[in-house]
Length: 87
Image 1 (cartoon, helix red, strand yellow):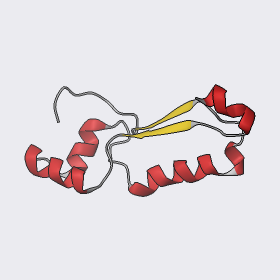
Image 2: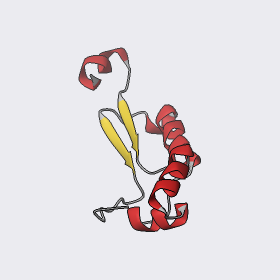
Image 3: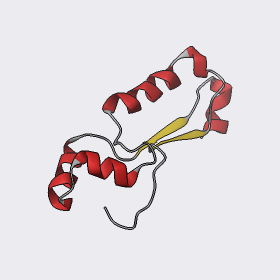
């Protein structure tokens, strides 16, 4: 898609957040028996779940002139996600 739309000066990138502090994280907290902080420590190298602003800041950057030469890129926002086998 990026190659097809580039001649029209349209950039195509995608944002892929993983664990974010939302209602879904609160649900995971209830069913796992772990606190949101504990989930973040187990699931990410940075030791915390993402804030909504962590995701929106990437989107704002991609919409800004500073990213004018970025296209066909995937942005995984996972805090250095790690796999523990179970949450």
